[in-house]
Image 1 (cartoon, rainbow, N blue to C red):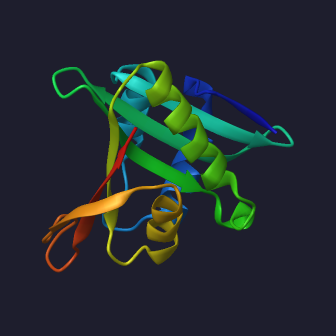
Image 2 (cartoon, rainbow, N blue to C red):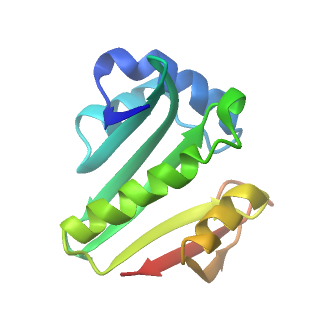
Length: 146
């Protein structure tokens, strides 16, 4: 297993995971490329047997002095292997390294497995965001204080 910074050459594999993981809230190829190459933050991929099995995108907020998990996804074929947990641990370590006081995220209220993962890692719901992902698609805003 290898966790490393994403490269442009990872785009197709990341896009495949994105499309198999999300519906209305999925990113386009150009949005993922921007996140991988230009966004202020960190974009990691997790490789198993030289194939990308998961990815993580986090953004730093200069003014808010916090880290935001922008996207995290695990290939359906590799779910249940604690890969999401490993990426959350990397996120917490990165925020600690940057001496940031908190990590935030938004998650669909329908994504019970992600909500459970975040809750187990000390994230607390601070707000319900109505229609965040479209009409009738609510999200939870969650924060972990460090």
